[in-house]
Image (cartoon, rainbow, N blue to C red):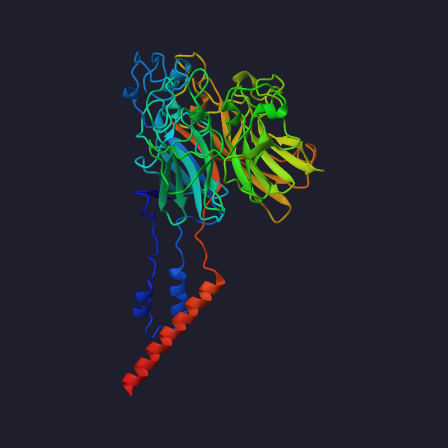
Amino acid sequence: MRTASLLSKSVCVGSMKPAVSAGSARLCLRGLGVLALLGLLADSAPAGLFTPGDLLVSGSTYAGTAATVTVGQTLPGGGTAIADGTYPYVFNNATVDSSFGVSSPIFINEITTSGSPVNTINIPTSLVTTSFSSKSELALNLSANGTSVTFMGYVTPINALDVSNSNTPGIVDPTNPVKSTTYRAVAQLNADGTMESTTTNAYSGNNGRAAVLAANGAYYTTGNAGNGTGTPPSTIVGAAGVQLVTPGQSATPSAPGTTMVGSFSVMQEGYPADKAGKDNNFRGETIFNNTLYVSKGSGNNGIDTVYQVGQAGTLPTGTMNPISILPGFPTILASDPNSVLHPFGIWFANATTLYVADEGDGVLANAGTSLNHGGLEKWSLVNGTWQLDYTLTNGLKLGVPYTVMDYPTGNNPVTGEPWSPETDGLRNIIGHVNGDGTVTIYAVTSTVSGSGDQGADPNNLVAITDTLSYTTSNQAASETFTTLKSAGYGQVLRGVSFTPTSAVPEPSTIVMMMTGLVVIVSAGLRARVIKGH
């Protein structure tokens, strides 16, 4: 297994073939044969760090020590610490500080689709970090051209407290109990191992969840905003939901640079006005057929469901794009006891088949019971309306405690409960359509446990193969999830994507290169003949 560490946004990682300049080509090509020419063409093609077809899995390792938090200290989000910085007990502080979190480094594992380790990329903490217990962060999305993956984080050192609920420097809510300011950032990891980061003032008071680089060259991001009391400022409301971020145009305190591409309100479904901004508390996102889709599955405001952003076939670029619930998906308020679905990751197998990861309700007592609806939902579009075919759960072992690698056994001394996590559902997903009429979906699991913050639980990467033509649970009864990778003690897994691949030169470019090489070689051979004469 290879291990690589990114040193800066412009440094390649791993063993890269150097690009061959035109000048060096002229120097090296004199007298070369055809095989050598073809070899040079191969070497001059863009080099890649990753193996095509492999998976990338994002995650984080807790980096704190006992000294990171001191029992009795006043926490940034309010309350007095009841546990020191020792993992996992440090996250019991979430019971006294609802904003509690500890920033930590990000890693990205490359593995095969069967789960064998290939490579580990350690993202520089000077560039971007994550909030360890924030379970909705670090989704990975492959760019439209397949040459990069994107994710979101914070521009802050590791072991900083409560950054996921901090304000951003350009958008400050004075009622936010967390007074620190931290930029959110979109990080882009390219196939050749280079990396770039763009800061934004979006998601002030909360976290950015996902980012995708679209064909039009823009980042589309999802997240939540606001952590204050009372009616939030309009700038906070405008920093939530779906944002458009321009790569390379980092924000400043005086130029917030937030562009909210649309807004949803429960009033569109006939309900009284909800808490401003929280209707747009989005998590998952995907682009299919040049259309942007997002999901909401958390919080007591808004509607937990799947949405379309803007018009079909057109990516939003302005600020007044409609956001609407997909026909057939739930339209009941998240606060309604009958609201039982919690959508997270979304993936289209085709125009009429949509897979939705359901995170579960997060209630320990409900895991694995009929009260919880966690798992992988399959939806089909029939006569213009989406309908739920079935939910895949076999093999997830919902509600069954599992052992965490290297975890010291025993009960949590603060809560008195076993800390053994249980799978509750799924979060981020990606899929692949196979040639035999099936699809394989890869998913990161959600958890419930006796921990103070279940987002800190070590979780798993799982996979399942489903037959596209199936529409009933009886047909899919034999399909089952398998575990490909498990987070170790002090680790969490967050996002999953296929590996990016380097761009392949267009056929016309290859022809031009070949023509130029032939001219160079011919000139070189003619010069040798004249000299010999």
